[in-house]
Image 1 (cartoon, rainbow, N blue to C red):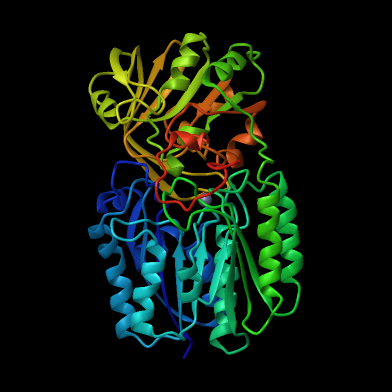
Image 2 (cartoon, protein in one colour; image 1 turned 90 degrees about the horizontal axis):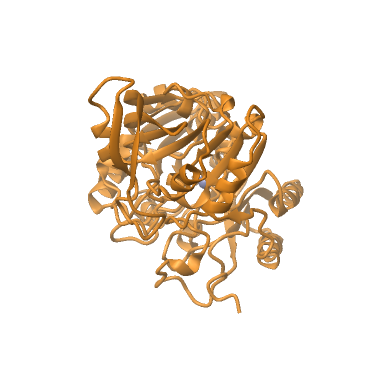
Length: 492
Ligand SMILES: [Zn+2]
């Protein structure tokens, strides 16, 4: 008889400024799967679940996986959706005999009733399994990790990369620690250090900059006796909640007095280097000017619209950058995704090659990134927006943009979709007849994840802030609940 492990994946990054609630349908649009379906779809990919299954096989565990659910980042999770996600977990937790629980949480969920969604998940779990059962949690480093989360799980382990390419490896690390805890080899708890900031200076990016050094330091700390995992979370700034911001978590032997100083040393470095931002956020006009002068035939210029990243809960419908590219007469380009279900639906009728005139984008919150843009172009593609990724993050995993169309306007192929996703895999263009590596200019909506697949084809990458909902100009957002003072709102 192997050890009995209960597992569940409940993942959401909630942008509390987004006016659209995240309901059950939003989870269905990304994925809402029971255990067997989740294992079939995700059990051998770059997922936490795959890492858990790897370790479970090696140790002969009996794993009961009850749910995998994730929605695209958006507004507060409705109470109905939260109950739908939690019910299978709490039901299984209360009826089974468990040696441990493994939860795959993003770590930035805010619901209608709970500012700390994950803290509430763990509270309800503890209410049925008691205070001592080993519980391991994997997190995205864009988690806003609360004191309650650390009090209710012994083990918390975040991805160490942004772009997140080590998701499966993180599942493995956490599962190995759960095994050692269940067998009595270790007795971990998790210490949390925090500084009064909305996010780490570079949003937690790990390809360059200070995070590279911090992770090297963390790996060195982990080589010490009684230190099991160090997680450095950049935080998620688009959440108007009390416990927002970067955290350092040190999971180690409960009796080890060295854990808190380690957490503090890393957190202090995040604070000390809070001004060391690496991105130069261009205006859309400045970005378009670079694109206008970009040499045709060279490797593509990639322009990331950082502020309108659907991957952090922006609406993804801001047309400001597209308008600037059209104004600058930048041809031989592609732009996407533009999240506009109404326009995508309108473009489902008619034949490929038809000329179409319509208003696209800017319909949700024109004050963030501009109002609707009237365009006339040629319909290049329409249909269901199914994508199977082939890049480092999404390889082998399926996603859907819902109803999708490509409209070519003045030499720019505009990918218009219904279900929000950020651009992070070349297949998200290629599946719709657009080859980004063959274009002079590729404009996309993403902050950092796009680099995993697009940096290898890029001649140059620039980043712009279109003024959309995830603008880095935080003073434009109506924060009311974050504790003050907080950086950078109260820089002085
Ligand atoms: Zn993340």
